[in-house]
Amino acid sequence: MADHDPVTIGIVSISDRASSGVYEDKGLPALKDWLSKALKNPITFQERLIPDEKERISATLVELVDAGCSLVLTTGGTGPAPRDVTPEATLAIADKEMPGFGEQMRRIGLAFVPTSILSRQVAVVRGKALVINLPGQPKAIAETLGGLPSATPPVTGIFAAVPYCIDLVGGPYLETDDSVCAAFRPKSALRKPST
Image (cartoon, rainbow, N blue to C red; front, side):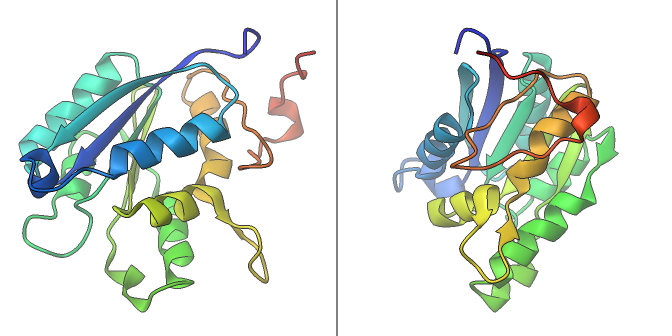
């Protein structure tokens, strides 16, 4: 791990009930587990568990980016219900929107349930950070990030594009474990493998 760039990743679970202790949050552990397996880089996690409040979500995202997070992943609050405001809060802090991520997340979800079209997940760039809204369920988080490699035809997870996106905005060089998720970069963007 010494040869890999260190990375700080913000993970945010957005839920009124989990943040008030009504039930245990499962989003943060799912995110940490998947990322720890997928990345070869040493990771420092900045974790937040917050309610579905637009201003609070926006402020938390800004705080994490300002604290040096190159990647911020949220889980929860992306449906059509009145309290689901994560996409609005995310777009409010964006320098650029990255619509391809949301399109692919819905495509992956549709392999399982027709209600995936109700999901409003977005991804944005703010400064040198990529911020992505993910689904709320741990299984859906893993499928969205890693894809469906055994499907016919295989469906690529969104994380395959994350490292190169972070390269392009000036963040650290993320290296993935190909057995979990093979990142894609053009040949000109590849770093020589460490020995």
